[in-house]
Image (cartoon, rainbow over all chains, first blue to last red; front, side, top):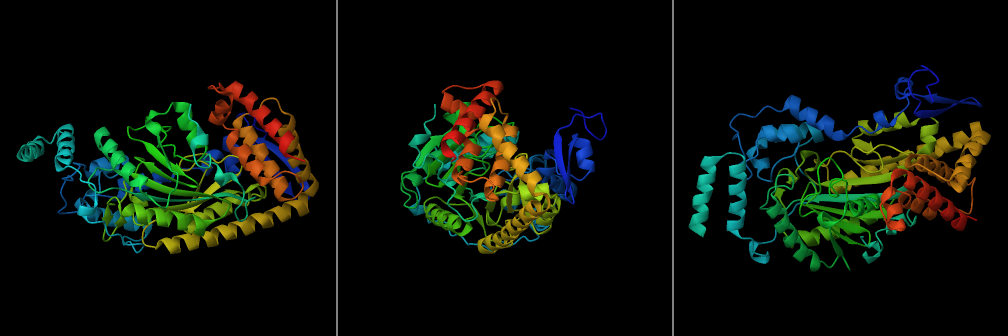
Length: 161
Length: 356
């Protein structure tokens, strides 16, 4: 079916207009529907993340004095700009001042005032091997071509093993 | 094939239409995003790390008192149609089920019990969620708060003194809390007030999405309204605020329905009965068609134009007429045209037996 207004586009929206007690039915294409201010599926569900990614792109230069790379996951601000996801919890400390600005823009605030959390003591937790963690870091360092760091981690691993 | 009857409530107690305003608000969901210390966040973690996370939390789950008879489902080991089934049932996100452009991650799992679930290796290591029927924010939060406190004593969460609970995406940091209500707003759509209402939501720090969350389309006049910010306000403030705004939206919807009946009564009545007639007799229904007609019938039930049809039946029709659910009933994967025929038959038979 073609659009009742432009007679060109394919009608995908059925619009029921109510004026006084009269009602009329219009079959509209996506474009004409949007021009009449009708919320279409295209205009209605814009993923929020796009706005967020745009914010990071436009407004997130590296702050002075911040390391270029997170020492735990080897993530960089460039990785973050590309994906909108941080690599690990330590990234929040590594890129603290850049993130503080970003959080203010996104949330209007950078300070958590909700529930506080105290982690259980390590003795209460199941043991996680330090060597396993180092091996993960080693693999990530090699993948991101951080060979000097990889050598350091390898030495530490040898020390443990 | 995945046997949903193994879940304590079949994963469907949230459809029972027991909550407040159940004809307008289908369900309330609250989720908390949490990450474990000592690992990279899920998107950056290696397969081995994600499997160790799963092992670590699995042990913790087994000793939880706030979840009874939980069942752990390894999502990464399921066939694609079973992953879709869990997603259609609102038990796992699109991302966890590997239904986005990314394949399912090694170590993706979900721990399910009556009205609560914990997704493992979603965008964050843990996504705790409570899903309730109707408009039920305090109850849903009570459940999830207890679960969070207990679990946080068994595994160490990543928490920052200033930024709060740390998450892979900074839009979730702080409380990690996202509360959302799935709400049916045909009155506001028909009176064309919906644009104003949705724009208003965004001005007051809330957001809306389609039925299946981020990036999903709005079909059948079903919207998900949720808080947008997670940092700088307490959990209680975020929830109170959402409750106040949703109450206001419900009032606007009720007012719009009164206007429709007053100004265009017979036209609306005709349109809604036609929707009912189509569902009652059609031999092939696409998903969008079914959703739109179900929206009409739901409105008719809300306006008391159609009686003898329960909101529970309407909720069930919404969920069980989806592709993977139809395939599950038929015992095999269906093509789109087969699904359209199966859908029409399922809707017809359900309406024949469950409406007076």
